[in-house]
Amino acid sequence: MEEQALFDAFQQAHRQMRRSLAQINGTVSQELAPSQARLLRVLGHHGGSSQKELAAFMRIRPASLSEVLTKLEQKALIKKEQDPADRRRNRYFLTDSGETLSEKLQEERRNQGGAFFSSLSGTEQEQLLALLTKLGKSDDPTQN
Image (cartoon, rainbow, N blue to C red; front, side):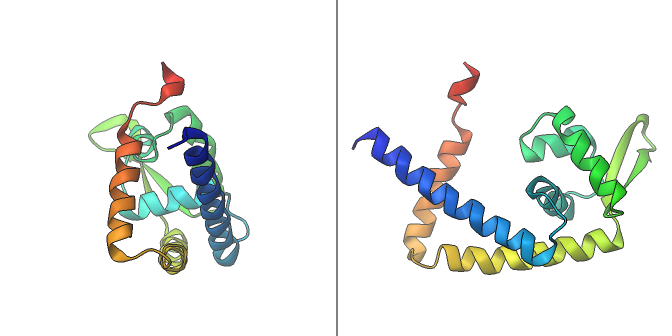
């Protein structure tokens, strides 16, 4: 198989997925950047995490996460609390309004995901998940 054709098809699917995610963010909250919506979803599953832990969950550098955390704090969607075990570290939690918005984002994401993947059979979805998981675990060639 020609690698360029594979890359082009993957890129097209990625564009469609990004449009779908942008539509979710626009439907639920027009004031959230995609990175902010993603962090709300992560905190919905991993509330009480440190900045370093959140960065690991999101696969980004902790420094890259700082601005997103600050903006969500300013919007009163998250709050930080000092870690009682290590006063140098903060732990991040969703506020009530952040929890509500996170739940709406998750619901819309499930709906859009169902629509996005509806052309694939259950078996094809399982195969795609296995392949994407494998690709996600492979070394990043840009880091060599």
